[in-house]
Length: 106
View: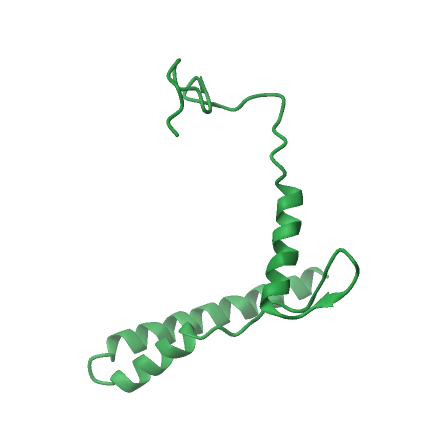
């Protein structure tokens, strides 16, 4: 298993170095070869992945962007429910949210 890790790390190190060299060459030649530079930039700007279908609370697969957003919103709302720790956080010796006796501005 150890040998596989060495080969894997060596491979990805080579990929990173080749990518860095390509980008360095494109940056150096950008003035003389604008077409290659902008082609590379435009390829990097394109979104390649989308969120796969998700399962809602009823066990149904949802595929539209709106339905996926709703499923993710429900999930994160349940994870970050606002239940705070019984131990208040401190920053610079003060409780977080402590206004020093001042009312919190709305």
